[in-house]
Each structure stands twice: as C-alpha cells, then as structure tokens.
Image (cartoon, rainbow, N blue to C red; front, side):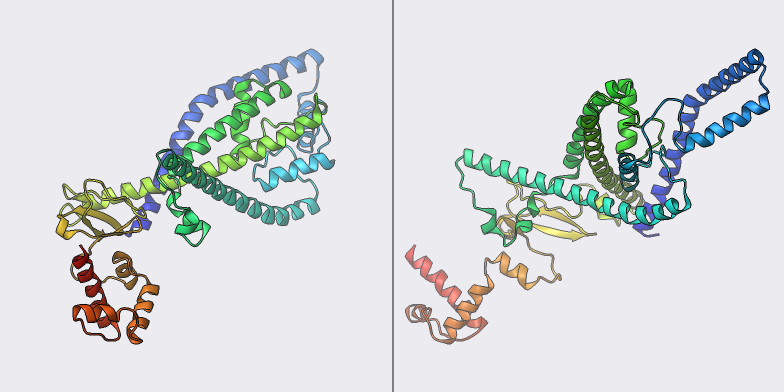
Length: 414
C-alpha cells in the first residue's frame, strides 16, 4: 500500500471514529431534552382535547395541514414575504453560498428544476471566489511580511535591494515570503472570531436572541451548515431595517469567506498530520533501513527551503525521500553561496545540472557568451595571455585559461 492509499484509509477511519464520538456526545446531550419535550407536548395535547372536547383525529389533521403550510412559509407570527424580490435575493444568496437554511424552498416544479441548474453554476463560481479570496489573503500577508522585513533592515541601517531588481516578476519576489500555514490559520481564526462576535452583537438585540444563540447562528451560517432553526432577517419590521439588512449581508459574506478559508487551511494541517503519522508507521517497520529513524539524523519537512545556519556555513545537502538534509562538514568541503542561496555539494555519483553549476560558481550565461565572443575575436582578454604566458584559444578551454589568468593577476596585484 503506497503512502496516498494509507493516508486515505487512515483519514476514513479517523472520520468514522469522529462521527461515532460525535453521535454519542450529541445523543447524551440532546436525547433527554427530546424526551421531555415529547412528554410536555403530549400533556398539552391531552389537556387541550379534554378542555375543549376536540376530536383528537381532527386535531391531528389540522396540525398536519399546518406543517405543510409551514413549509410554504406560513407562520403563526407575521413574517416578511418569502418570495418578493428582497426575499428571493436572500434565498439565492443562501443557495450559491451553500448555506441553505431551509426556511425558503421552491414549491413549484419549474422552480425546483431551475434551482438545479442555477445552483450548479452558482455554487461552483462561489467556491472559486472563496479560493481566490484565500489566495489574496496569503499574498497580502506576504506583502506585509516583506514590508516589515525591509523596514527592520532600514531601521538597522542595512541597505535594502528592491525586490523588483532581484527577480523578474512580482510573484517570484513574493515566493520567499509565503507565510506559514499555521500563521495563516491564526490570522483567519482571529478574523473569524472578531466577525462572529461583532455580528452577534448586532443579531442579539435585533432578533431578540441570546448572545450564545447569536454565536451559534454565526457559526452555523458562516460554516455553510445552515440548519435553519435560527435565521436572521425574517421578521417583517426592524428598527433601521435597510441598514440592518445591509449589515446582515456584509457579515454573512465576510464570515463565510473567512470560515471557508479557515477550513481549507485546517484541512492542509490535517493532511500534514496524516502524512506524519503514516511516515511514523512506515518507519516503525523499517528501523534500520529508513534514514529518518536513525539516531542523530533530523528529517526536514518537504517542500521547504532551509536557511544556512550561522554555525554551519559549510555543508552539503543530501536528497533522501524528497527531503533535504544539511550535514555540516569542514571548510574544505564547503559549497558555494550565490545570491543568498546555498548550493551544496552532491554525493558522488549524482548528476548536477548546468543551471546549478552556473549558480554555484556565480557564472551567468551572458558572461559565458561574452567570454566566448572575446576569445573568438582575440578581444581584451588577450592582454592576460601576453602578460602571463597563457595561450589563447576558443571555447571552454579558453574560458578556463582566462579564469586562471584573472586569478594569477589578482594574486600579483595583491
């Protein structure tokens, strides 16, 4: 079984265990209340039929008819119309955001068929919007982190090179400043709590809910669970009605964006945790053959760039199972540091690309072309051959000679 299948099976088992634990807890909390409510309703029904001498079967028929009317939006208390333009706009907002409170549902066949196609496109577009919102949050945090770093360097009196000069594109300049997934989770969590608390402060007096019920509604709505037991903006009249409805829409939009993005980030952390657990389980069966189980070796995270330690300026990278390990050696085994990126030596038998070779030796393609042109046309570098006795030539040998010439001249000047 490969790692992906093992992670999938582990996740399925954990979700099943999570569901069983949740069912047991909710059953213990809510089932006694349900039994009490049933007994109370039966007592009230018996008292009503005995006092007014009403036929129990006729009363049940009336109650069933009221349940059907209730599904169509008829309530004992006077509520706002469900299918005027403002009510319909509220409904489509709950559809495309996948909240689906259930307070308003289409009753006609044409409305149900139209909802299928409308929700298919609307939900897909909204999910795309939520994903792009998360990308914008990460980009904004990257800008903030880079700005704080540059400001700290300026305060310390260190010159800061513009990121546009260091890279050809804006996205490349932010690549090294992508924030940690835990940092993004913290930011989104704090934003979600602030929005939920602010919205609850609005809902509690306007809807006559307790503050706990308001927080409960915020989570159910923002997480797109949408039970429908509590729904905002359903009464016919409010104080400052237009301002309240506008604030309600803004809070729901901001809350859904933050909570949905938070769910995505938490899912990444869960995936990393599952990968770590699977790796531990695999390594436990390979005590000697698996490098990550050997004492004294530290396995780094995948897809991460490890900085050069100040006490280990010289080292080499080992590539094992997709991870990168840095092993400190002596000064004679040092790699090259080019443009702030450490390029270490590879193990024997491993191939090195031309790009890595040029970066490690600080040689650019433009410099190579220039040197080839000069050696071919007996350019300025011929003076070194006359001074130091090195023969000219064309091609890679000429470049090597020119390098040796420059080195010898530098030593003579020193």
